Image (cartoon, rainbow, N blue to C red; front, side, top):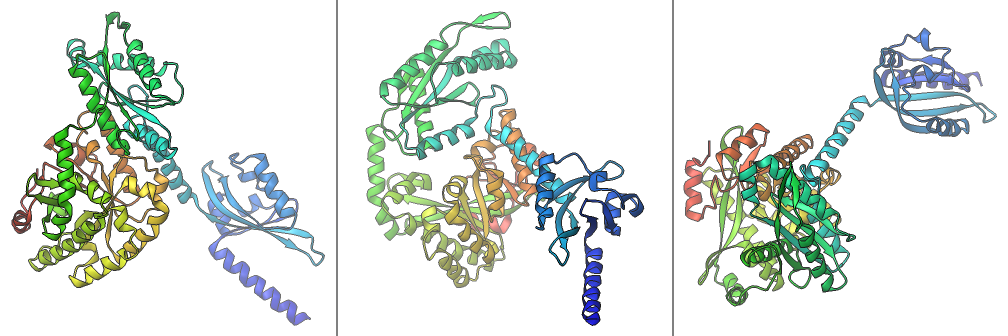
Length: 568
């Protein structure tokens, strides 16, 4: 019996020694009075052991947690159950610290609690990082989704609203408003005066007596509206209400002025199935209203007969294009802003059409998708790129090259195996190949994509989140993705010098991207001014017309030999 007691006592001593070396340890009686603290407890709390023994933990209470928090904790441990949680405490000098805490009740031979052992680990740095990340997220959301001048939702937020209406299968219209001759106001009275006009216009638009309408500012003097409706006449009445609201004079700094809006309207499902096209078509209709004299609204009309003819010719020729090998890849350089050297390329598909000349992917891939040919073209492009990378490598150019991948191709059951096979067939290192996925694609198919992205990541293939900022990715989602780089949408990057909103948005994206260990690429860069602004806010890489609009097969070989394209 004595031997067993000695053995148990020895084991307990060893356990206590191990805990003393690795954890913050305290023991209290059933009333919570401290009977033991180890050196690590004294170190983090800045109290001596004699100052703590005989006291309760109130001596280090920070006041952060509610009374209910501690009541629930005591209810758990007094019932003989283990409690786990995170607690903020206050050290002797007033500084705050966080500990991950496990409290274990000690029971006597009758099953009654006679003391509590609290085992803690310092998580202050982790909590500090979490708080910084939450603050960054809050700032990012404010900058990312609202116009700084009018406080209206911005175009990114507007697109989120449209995406939501699409998921609800709700009939809705998009209205695009532009103020006629607004530039004259700015030139006459100054930009500050123009800003006051925009603020007043925004107020009037918001006060229209219609429910469930999303009013946003796109940029400059452009406003957009998402208008759910039951009858098409509702859209007409709303457009007339907008014109009426802006028909009376505005009083700005004692000046009486008048503004006249031109409004374009597109209808979801009738005109298009994508929100991007809806906005574009409403914009086109708005210009029609301007051309008719302004201060009126116009509905979008279908493309003219020659555009329809072109569409039919493209669809008819697509199958033959695949058979006749009429596709090729063109290459867009990426420049590292720190080293001023080309650090990668993006490959894009070009169709050398016999009638219409070189067509960009956006001109024919939508038709290929409808015809069930997009995967065939996508596989050709990816395999061809691997073959080209091998050719470039054999010539001494070990530069990573990325290419956009469609969701349909990515979700093919043999996609991962095909990528692996092509890498091996052409002796391509995984980190020489990059795959770009749009933000919208990832949002819509996150649950299916994550395992695929993780598999590609394990292979070593580079993954790029493309067109970031065009939709509405939250930081929580970004943290869950297995990616390497974030590419800012070209429509945002190319307007960095146009207004402070885009500048602050890009700055926030870079800060958040770097905090998540992602490199950040700015697409669509057109000028030296934009390059310098991006360099000043620590953007890693740029891509766009300032470098090149696309290098063909002959040009890319010369470029990789010389590597001389650089804006600065």
